[in-house]
Length: 304
Image 1 (cartoon, rainbow, N blue to C red):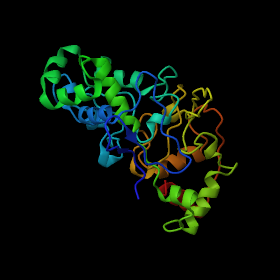
Image 2 (cartoon, one colour):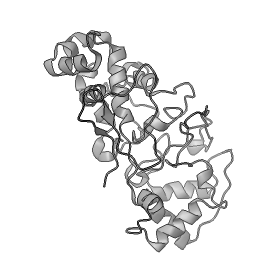
Image 3 (cartoon, helix red, strand yellow):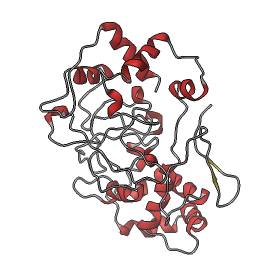
Image 4 (cartoon, rainbow, N blue to C red):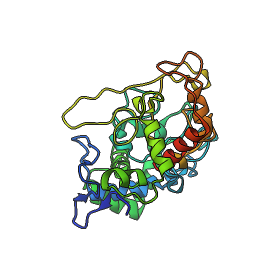
């Protein structure tokens, strides 16, 4: 059973299929979720005409078959510019209190999406408003836009609102770990993986100090609370910059790892944390794993 967001059959309404007790990601007051905006955003997400040379869409770097990552150490823009950061998965991104790896000021998907669309250093998609006439003249996109926004002219603002609406629907909480915790389903959860779960949440390893909550991530939105972003300096590649702790969901399928894609597999990630992180890392302490413990921890990560 996939617990994914699903489009509602009635106009304007969007029905969420989520586990009991899990609320949908919050949306800004000026961009409430509607089925029509989600449909437009889904079409735009795969449309290369949002890039300056018709070569790149959002889906080029966030590939559904790769759990909305690209499999590269660092993203590559439509003109060949190499981005300084790894492409993170979009699953459950609507829950995060901050977006990207380290910018505390990017707190909504609407704000974040403008960066890959319009950034010039490096160029990611190279969107400019000069691309709008062709997009607006397309019968399919124009029809979807009219359904989503009525007579409001197509603009960067409406495109971003539609894309953000679609990305908010990328919710996944159907892993063996979820089914084990939420429904006490034991199928696929080995004794080794259960031992790894205990290690993950142990104070000796302290993985859950940074990867916490329902998404095993940094801070997420909580209804009625003002949750501030948190960043950690693990010093991977000896970087001095603190980074947001990403979600560990589907982590076994989203290599390579860390903000710069410098760790090729989960075994390398465990080596890094066993050593206490990089040069002058904060709040990390070295630990030692036995061979059995390492295999147990890897088995647990496979469940996510």
